[in-house]
Image (tube, one colour):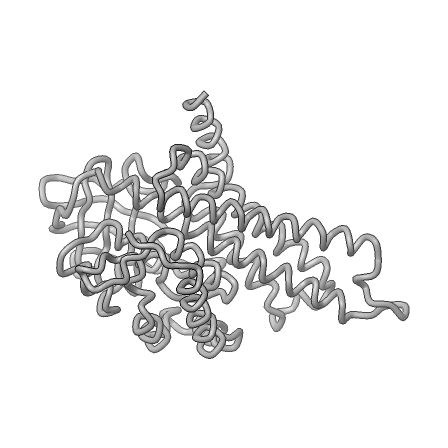
Length: 346
């Protein structure tokens, strides 16, 4: 995959941020998350027209052919804006699909959701089985499944594509309404589209993309808390001048910067095939999730009572943080994987 120059990457991110500022402000996020589907087709079309749907799709299939590095940076911008769109699902599906399905994905004409099952189900929630050219069982908590026309399923040594008409999709009540999830029950034909060779890369991309989103969200909520500490006055002074608040803000900055560093290192090692990629990805998987939860939780404390109201956006970041920390397995799982990766290289 290609990598952009620093100038090209800056231009790409500027375009993404301007689009999100115009089409994904807090009022837009609230409107979309309160809709029945949790999806804004016009926003997704605008992102696709900008090339985001095909960001990591090879150029021969109509995509931009960019690497995990650019994906991670775009996901940081998406996380900061709490983007309620299938950007992460699309990027992961792009690592698994091929042919016409991949071209449709790149053009924004198709939405694919990815269900990691078998030994690749980090959460242990799914019981999907393959019987020849048919799948049975249920994949649980699949992001964006309710709006997808294709469900991509990874088992131990195979990748399948299933049309939504050949599955039963049950939308779930979710803590974070900016990322909808559904259970997908399979009871019909499935098309085998690949073997297990692609699965590891898709796993790594999913984790690195989520880590980028978490780093972006952590930075944004930290900035919101610091701005509030400058503006809010008590006893004739800005609360940011109080020592306890200063210490809390410093801790949030450290968490945010550490998350950004971990997410970008994981993306870089995926793009460049680093020898310590497994350790870097596992580190990002728990460090970025933990940092986002810490930043969102402490930011609510720094805001005081106002942050507990529905009208304030702080709770939206906390919801995204807590749901994301469980999306692909919890922090304890990835800490164990990180230690094993270090031991393997010792």
